[in-house]
Each structure stands twice: as C-alpha cells, then as structure tokens.
Image 1 (cartoon, rainbow, N blue to C red):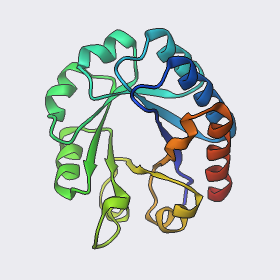
Image 2: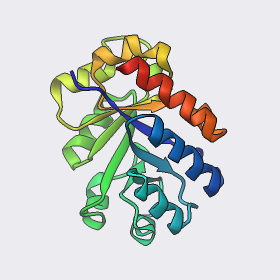
Image 3: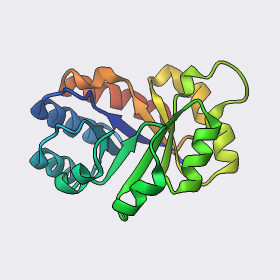
Image 4: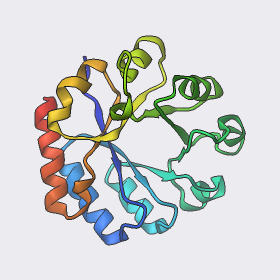
Length: 188
C-alpha cells in the first residue's frame, strides 16, 4: 500500500506571506503534493508555491483565473459541470468536491475530473466512502475533511490518494511543521 500524499487546503482569506511561510515549512516536514487556495491569491505567490514543488489549485473560480494565475488546476463545488470546464482547461487539473455523494463522484469521474474529494468524516453510515471508491475507480480520491494522526487508523485502510491536514497548520510556520511532521510520522 502506498502512502498518501498531503493535500494542503489554505483558508480563503490567508495573507500571501503567511501562506508561503506555512507552505514552505509543510513541504520541509512531509510529502505535500498540492495546495488549494482562494482566487484572490497573487500570481507571484502562485509561482512561489510552485517553486516549492506544490501544484496550485484555485478554489471555485472562473476558469480564466486559472490561466491568468498560471495555476495548475481548479477545485469546484459539486454542482459545476466538469465537461464544460474541460473545454477551457485542457491541460489543467479539475477536482470536484463530492461531499458524501457517490452519484456526484461517479458523474465527476465520468465527465473527466482528475480527482474527487470526499467529506469522509461526514459519512453517517454504510461502507467507508473512500474505500468503496478505491475498489471501483481509478480517479484519485482526496480525504477532504481535515485529518490528524488519530484519524489515520480508520482512514489509511481505505487507501486515499491524498489526505488534507488539520487547518491549524495555517497559523504559523511552526504549527505547519508540527502538523505535517505528526501526520508524516504516523503514516510512515
């Protein structure tokens, strides 16, 4: 079983300097794949995050914004049409937040989404959502509800491709390093 990579999700209103310093600390502390940011991010900040080795994904924005910022992709709410976005964003990544809906996740995958994000902690009953997805689909799954080391015992057997760390990582670079190191150690 391969170890999931970390999917960082910054608060929409975080200052660019704090975003960069926390992201830099996170990358040093663990295997971070991407960072989800708000559309108000500055283009130089996108470039600086990419220089850290992170794919920069813009949350719920106009597709033109992805091109303007030279970002790596877009993360959309479940109601948005993936097929029409794919016409504009040919090479960029498109991620869909499916919450706990299997139907939305399947529609997104069939329409060409590059990943599906699940609210795994919100699932009230039934078989684990991410585990179900991984048994059937090849499109990567993101455990989108924030996770700490204590959550990994239930989550890792489901084989998520990406895990979102706790949001407390965005308060300071020290907190980012602590949160990421704790998750990384627990996944090792």
